[in-house]
Length: 485
Image (cartoon, rainbow, N blue to C red; front, side, top):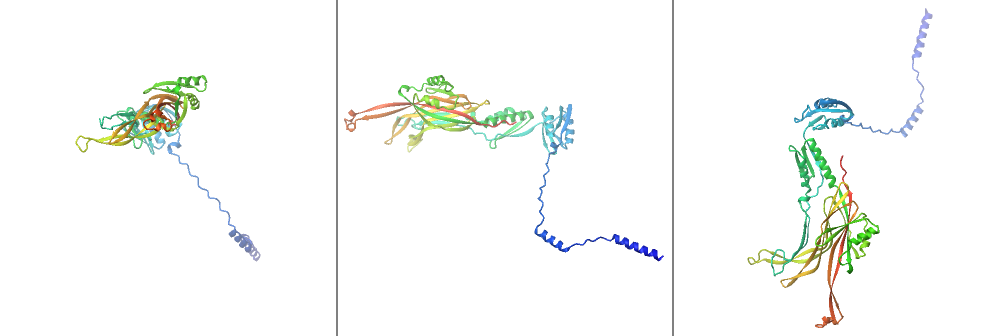
């Protein structure tokens, strides 16, 4: 009994010993050294990763739709489609929901599917999540941008010697020329209004904001599409620009060529030598004839060499102007001369007696030229050119309060021509002849200055020097707005 009790006690002790935890011996000095090392060299910090943003996809673009129906009411097509796309449908009262449509498409986005469904109908739609709005009439705003204002160009050379005072001292005379541009013909906003008015239906409305450059149209689908095409074509046309390279040349004619340059001889010389391809035409001007001479090469150096056969060639000016399609560029070459003009008031100190006083005026002597380019769809350029040449060979004198006042007698040469050429070609305009008259005194030194007898030893000679102005114009289309798709 005692022996079995002893064995039981021994077994319990052995069991408890086996279940006891095994504590490993740990060196504290190693732990302290490791703690110091970790404090001196901290572990590297992992780089911060910025979370990748989720791509937000609009509901109507993340699903693809397939549908096929023939002669089905548009309501029965849109309602299940919008239900699948989680959209509400709002119908305008003018819309007939029973309008039949026949469509068939596969794997299209909601936007593409709506385009296919509404294409054969007269209805319009707009999506404002979560609503699809179906309507018969809509309002669209078209941006036209900057439109040039009315062009009213007036060129005046010279003036009335007596102003507004008739029959003063028996002196009268008027020398002036005016070239006016019709305001209505170049009022682009009026043309826009007329175009939109012809497009909009009787039920439609439109509003033009000239200051903002916008056109608002309220109408049906077909008319809105026509208005959009009209505005796009107008923007494309107005956005095109032309760089006009001009060169004004004066050819001082020799005595044998005082009648002017023989342009037929110039044409024959160039064609026979096959140096340049040219075409020459003649346009009647006032008071004489003006010659148009078109060259396919933009470099006119060879033509200048040929002109040197008729006299001394002097290049007066080489301006370059950039002008928008249908707008007018003015080119002036010459000098401004001052003169006196009598001006009067209606009443003076005595009733019915005008008050007259001199007023200084100016006049441009030289070349004034207006150039208006029109660009066609095939890149041809039509140039309307109005050159006006003015010069003053003589001056009129009149007395005013014991003073002698002078005013020039201005000679005017004007032409108006329109020619169509290719982009980059050169048009040459000639036939504008000017004349300079000078009085030269020749005398024997000393003897010619003797009183009374001096006229026996001197003479006066009147000379006339004629020159022809030649104008080279080269239009280059520089830019245009591409047609919007």
